[in-house]
Picture 1: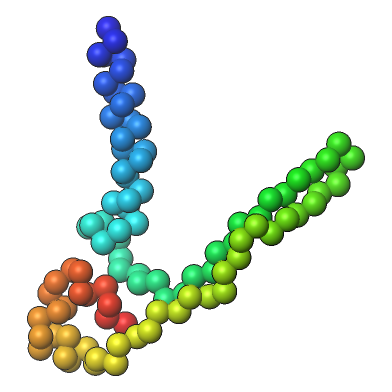
Picture 2: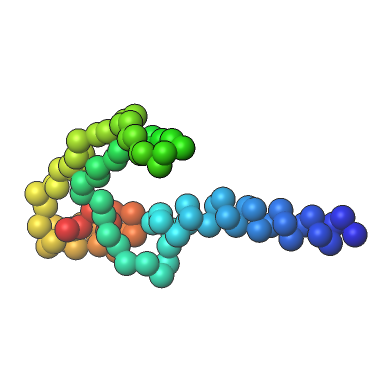
Amino acid sequence: MKYVIGLPIIIFIVILLIGPMFLFSSFNFLGDLNPVSRVNLEFSLNIVNSDLQSTDYKLFSTTSIEKEQDGLPDEFYESMGFSENRVTRIYMA
């Protein structure tokens, strides 16, 4: 009985952990390619006291991180065969 209940729960937990990694990575066969060029990240702590007054503390914040674009035109990617490889195809603008 413990295998009938435990095994599906373990499989469900593994899918919850590994699923988003495949969904948002280059292994996703269904998704369109969308390379990230800029990121802003901020962590803050919001504390609400008993009087419903909110206090916001900024814990961490970054400025934008911008990826440099390589200057190769699409013709060079195609002539070198980069457009056929999924890993190098994500770098095409």
